[in-house]
Image (cartoon, rainbow, N blue to C red; front, side, top):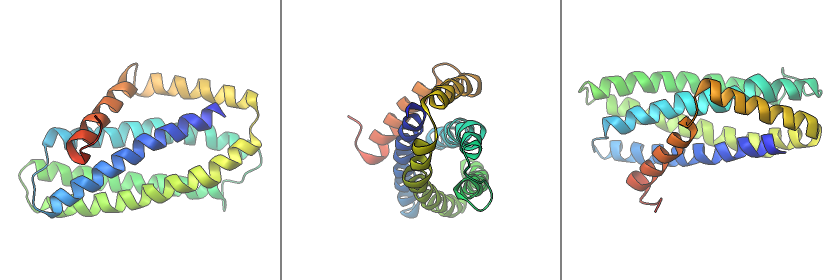
Length: 187
């Protein structure tokens, strides 16, 4: 399914960001300073790309389609994914506050950033694995090509409305920059 493949590709970008976050956490643990622009861009990526775009596609379109196909929200994988999305939002909110303090010169905020990053990486790593191996498998089995086409169009519309034309590409360029800076990869 093209819609599921789109979400899986986004998961790959998110996984790369999780690796960058782990590198940032290690640097903070060693007492190294992190570039404020990088932290700001990371926060934008987590808020816009991960939450508004990726989770938005799932919550507004995929999950309702799965419910309509007979997968229950309560007591099932959809409810679990929604709870984890909310948990991720709380961690990102706490991380945003810690980054703000850190960028204002509060050196003690580095520990808070590190702990929030570590919690977020653990949550999202497990979350992505569950979606890829359970929820998306269910979607592939239950949704037909007409629903797939409808989802693809809805995803494109959401992307254009929520993040704007070209922003997706900007996020990927930023990921490439962070990949090179923090992981030493990316070309």
